[in-house]
Length: 187
Image (cartoon, rainbow, N blue to C red; front, side, top):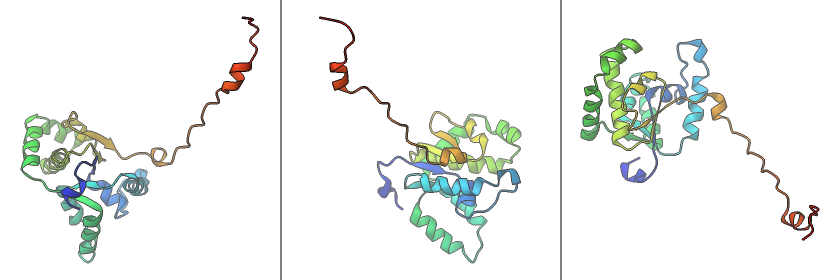
C-alpha cells in the first residue's frame, strides 16, 4: 500500500508483537499468555484497513522469519499493510521523545536495553509522523512516551474482541396509548 491509498483515513498502527503472534501464530514464551496469538489474529481482522506497520517493526519481524518463507511473508505484508518509513519527520519526533529524558527510567523499569528502547521510540515516532490515531503494543513502557500525541492501546482481551450483543431498545408507550389513556383528570 502507498501513502496515497490512505490519505484521509483514520489509521491504527501495530507493533511487531501483534504480527509475530497474530500473523505468524507464534506462541509467547510465557504459557500464561498463550491466548495472545488468537487475540492478535482477531485484532488484525477487526482493525480497519489499512493498518499502519512502522518499517522498524517490519524489520524486527523479518529477522525472525524463516529465510525460505521470508519473501512470501513480505509480499503478504505489502498487500495488507501500509508499511511506513522511518523518515525525517519520524526522526525529529524520535529525537523529541529521546530528549524527554525518560529513556534511562524506561530501561531500568522495563529491564530492556538501550537498543530495544531506541527501536520502540522509532516505531512510535513513525506512527505519530504518519498520523496514526493509535498504536497497539504489548510493551507497557510505551505509555511513558508522548501520550498526548497518540493513543497507546494494549492487545484487547478475548471479551473485548468478541461481538457484543446489541442492546434491546427500550419500549416506550405508544403515542396513541398516551393520547387516550385516562389519567383521571378532567379538563
